[in-house]
Amino acid sequence: MRIFEKYISRQILIGFLLISFSLLSMLWLTQSLRFVEMVTRQGLPIYLFAEMTSLLMPRIFNVLSPVAVFVAVLFVYNRLIADRELVAMQSAGISPLKNAKAAIYVGILLSLFNVYIMNFAIPQSEKLFRELEWQVKNNMTQMIFREGDFTSLKNGITVFIDKHEDDGSVSGIFVSDESKPNIKVTLTAEKGRLIHTKKGPRILFINGVRQEINKETFKFNSLAFSRYSAEFNNAGKHQKKDETVREKNIFELLSSAQDKTLTKAQMRKNIVEGHRRIITPFYNLVFALLACVGLLVCSFNRRGQTKVVTAEVLAMIAISAGDLAFTNLAGRSLYIVPLMYLNCFIPLLVCVYLLAFYNPLYIRRHLFKGGVNYAS
Image 1 (cartoon, rainbow, N blue to C red):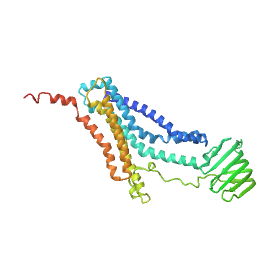
Image 2 (image 1 turned 180 degrees about the vertical axis):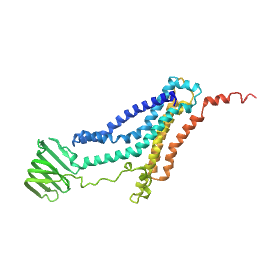
Image 3 (image 1 turned 90 degrees about the horizontal axis):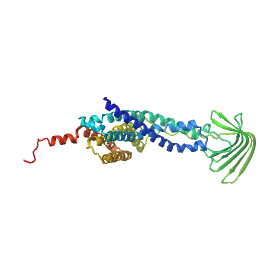
Image 4 (image 1 turned 45 degrees about the vertical axis):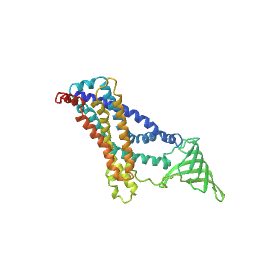
């Protein structure tokens, strides 16, 4: 790789990293807002909050990567033209394809990295995320009952703790249980303690009263006790959901037609996701070439390259919209899957053709060199 290609590649990578980090930070902030309630109201530990939100990053990076590389390449090549660096290289006889090698190298590198992201990083992070989410929502051991706050659990139970003692017990405990639709149970106790059994965690109440009312018959029962234990964890009642599409590997997705447990809609969704894992990484290369092809093959304009840049941005939006549209349509009919490939590889071939064979300066030189005499 020549010095000039290394220089351009380094500038593109620096720009890509800055843009990706900025966009990831903003999207991480928006995605993390849905977990803030778990921290503020349910007492989710900060380390679990950070772990859960960080597991979303591979999925977000996969979406942002093609756009980030497009912006980085467009910015770098437009600046090279404005500083007359690229103009000097073109005047020296270097072809557009050679000047685009830096963008090609970066596009190939990011395509390979996104292959890893889509087929290894995302399935693993999705599995870990779902396991953590299931534990937090269904396992009471992940909850921290804070003093003076009402903590609402997922199964219709509200717990209030007055004070945490040094020995690990709690004092002044109140529990409202509405897990059963027709019965409401209220438990109050002087002290309580969370204990662990083979069946799951239970709460041991000491010196309290249990009150129960039937909402249909309005029958009321009251019981005073010195010791009473109850299971309030609903982890055993709710089984984990089946694997999502993102958790499966590409071989499982593409062979979904042989899986008799799937419905036709699920089978189509799995197959489309498998093809997306093949196609999507190539958009990094497509957008890298798309960002520089217009600037390299079009004539230099001292007033700026506004029209060329606008056309490239519109082309990028059209390709992205086509990918989204064909992916959604392929979920209804697998006959649309070839259009997903065409939407990616036709722009790629067009860009390569323009860079390799379309040279306006070369055409003008040979057209008016004297080989054709229109006056005669």
